[in-house]
Length: 322
Image (tube, rainbow, N blue to C red; front, side, top):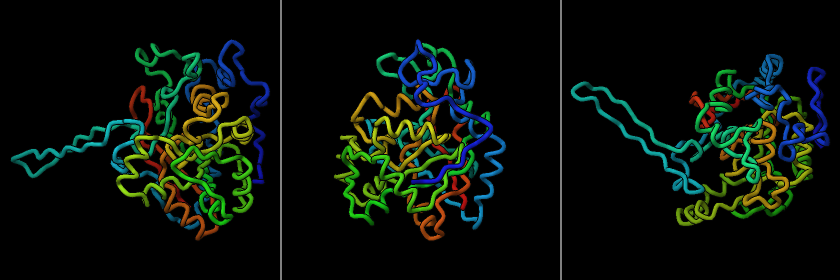
């Protein structure tokens, strides 16, 4: 399994001590960083982790991790498609453009206003639906105000590992990636995990989407089923104990979708429970090729989302630097 380096500065309570707010939903870590906290687990990104992450820049190779805003046509889950209007400011030879799009129609960070505990209808740190409409609390602008999601990224290339081991992993079905496989990937790549790491998992979804015909792509986006990390206690415990600051993948929902065990629904636990950002539909193709070429699966990662007060989600504007 992957190696871990622990941090002496911060010790989270044990996974078994959850929920922290005993009157709140299962698994919540509300109040871990204070009653009024809006950063959640992103508090693990500190000046120290940022400085340490700069040591990952060895080759100076910069790789964008966002797909174009119009990549998925139509977007998944019935979301609004991207539209660009270019306005020529006649009689001057000058143009403006006006963009209309759903912030989750392509590469995206899910923010803490996106997904609530579905039964309790409570968002991170106890927010209710009325709070979402009447305040900007828990908005993605808070991430931006604190410098974005910047730190050490680690890529687990599950797709390449599974192919090399002859493991079938259909991208357009609810294929669960188990923890045991992720740990084997980490071991094969000689990955060392550190507190505050930003975890990326390449499932092969984007590669399969690109290889599909337009007819298959349309059926896939309508159906919505996809490969992803397994929704189980093992995964939750590992993410918590590893002190990852954020998680992301190339698949539409991070976890296998539809969720196969709602007791361990990652979207509820991570977004509403812990304040842990989930990245979806990331472009990990070029990054995977370069990581394999350099035999280096860790890198400096920088993402500054859209500065929208009260923002629910955002394109990451992400770059990995090896």
